[in-house]
Every structure is written in C-alpha cells, then in structure tokens.
Length: 465
Image (cartoon, rainbow, N blue to C red; front, side, top):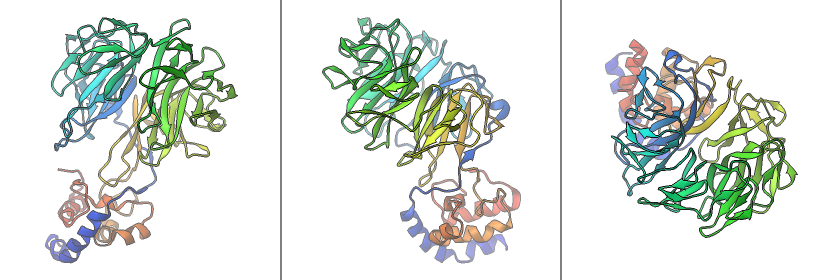
C-alpha cells in the first residue's frame, strides 16, 4: 500500500475513533513484563544505592527524569560522580556530582505546578564542588547546601512529611543543633524530631515512611532501642508531638534492624517493614513483616536473608516488590528480587546476580504501567548484562502491534485495528497494548501516527522524534 493510500484510506473513521480512544486511555496490563536488555558498556559502572524520579520543569514539557545515586563515576558514556539522571534514552550528569556516596534521594516540593528541588544525602562533604555536609539540593542548575552546617555524619534516609523534609542516618547534629539520628528541615532551618533515637552500639535511622498514607504518622526504622526516650525496638512512629513504639517492634537474629519501609496496598494498606530480623511483635517473621495498626504479622514465610528496598509495581493497585540479598521468597527460588500479590511470593524472571539496594518505577506514557527499575551491586538481570541498574517492563517496541518481537507487514492490520477499534484490539491481542501504535510517542494512538508507522515499516526508523 502506498504512503498516500495510508494517509487517505479510512482517515475520517480513524479520526472519529481517536476521540473515543483518547477518552478511553487507562492503565492496562499490556504485554507480559520481563527483564529488558541492559546498556552493556554504557551501564552504570558501580553500585546504585538510591533512586527517585524528578520532573525538572514541573508542568512543563521536559520528560520526567530517573535519578540514581550510589558509588560510581560513570553512567553510560558520561562522567557522573555518584549521581546521574536518565531521561528514557540517555544518561546525563548533575553538575560535577559529589565527592562521596549518595545513599538517599527525594524531592522537596515547590509551589503548585513548579518543579521541586532534588535532595540528595549520603557520605559526601561537597556537591558540585561546594561544601555540603552529607546533604545537598539541586535546583536544576547548581548544587547547594541545606543550611550552614548540614549534618555531622552519614545520612541514609529522606522523605517529606507534613510539608517538612525529614532526614535519618548516623548523625547527632543537623544545622549545628543536636538531633539524634533524625531531623527536620522547614525550608530554612534544621530542627530535631523530639529527642530522636538511642540505645544499641551505634543507633541509626535507615528508613522512613508515612502510615497510614493519608494524614498518617511518620514511621522510622533502623537500629535503635529507644525513640523519644521510650522503649522502641528498631521501629517507631511520630505523631507530631511524641514518639511511640509499634507493638514490641522488630527483633530476633543477629543484629536485627529495619532497612526498608512502605505501605501496601498504597492507598489504604498495611505498613510493611523489611530488613534483617526473625521476629516482629514477638511472632516469627523472617526479614519482612506487616503491621495492620494493631499487630505484627509475617508476609508468607518471608525471605531467607535481608530485604533492603520496596516499591509497588504497577504503581496503582499493583504488587509489592521487594529487593535485597535473598535467594528465596516464600520458600521458592527468587534471586534478590520478588513480588507479593497479596497472598503469595513469586520471582521476577530469573532475578539478578547480586544485591538489590533500591527500587522505583519510571513512568511510562499515559495509560501505561512504566518500567520497574532496580538498582544495586549486580551485573546481570534475567541473565542479560545490566550493570548496577535494570529495567523490568514490556519488551515490545512501538510498531510491533502483534507482539511477535519484530515490526513487519504482519503488524499492518493490528495497527489499523488499534487506531480504529482499541477495544477490539484488546480482545484480539490480549497480551499486547494498543499504545504500541503511538509511533510519535505523544501519549496517544492517533491518525498522526500513520506516517511514522510507515517509516518504521519501510526503513526501520522506529524511534521517536
């Protein structure tokens, strides 16, 4: 069929269907996810320890970035000292980076519709060549310190709670003021969070979250025996005025501690704690446990060794994803990463070959689940070279409307169907996604995608402009 024929044939009908299509865009399973090929030589050259997503221009047209921090000097083919950003296609440095490890990342919100500031914490003392003791902020152009003094020791956890930035770690001072392992930044000054944590050989706060997720309390996990001067075994909650324990807390095993916290399901679920422990609330719970607001319970039979990170994928009503150093989950083989569907543990393919330290989701186009991103100390994912970071998502590329792994003449009829009748397309191709017809990558499958599809089919030019 000629190029002119594609432009004219059925154009009015496709246009009519496109309006219905645009209104019908919603999250759907798409093709079965798997570990995607890494960048080979252009992967990150050493461990990724923290990840987040950051929109550099708020409601502007720039793509959301995946930001990774850790202990590395290269990301792709660019020099990136311990922090870098991925725009979906290429790596870019953030200034000259840090002089030490980055262990925590979050975004401190700006005014509505504006980009917030990217916040990084870790083991560094300079950021962008400027003094910044263990914490710094990036405004899109330069790195700056938070306050005059920052922290006096390592920082391991960051999040925003009640409009303030919360930091946890090994420090005992923030902004020159006493702050026992946890502190809050109100946009101008550092202040303690009550009397903080204590007890143990060297207390620290390693993980933070909010529970319940809507107007809930700040929850801190790590290695400590007191919070606010009260007994609290490795996990505690702050209601804005006082620290309180969560039952009898987390314990058991050698040097028990909490490394990761989240809420699952995301909107109104239970508090999930992961780390290195064998009991929660006095009940057996190996490396992972859940708190329903009153009692601790295990998540199945847990994992055989510690858990370092959580996320939920797909982001809304998805599965709980856990990463760490384990090789079994729920008694079944699961190499350093596994998923919990609310009842059972399952592996993610053949997993990765070394520890997972961080997890997040990199958003896809509207109506798509995006990609699950894992960071750590591994070199392969799903048996493929993927150094220090890996992507779990849909392997099919745009234009492959029958999801057979290639773009050829067999995709013509499915392409027409995807544009003209996406509901029927989902029936005929249940393991695919009609947004694979979005050839210009504007977030919709539209008649404007016809010419790019022809170019893809004819010349193999299947990228986005």
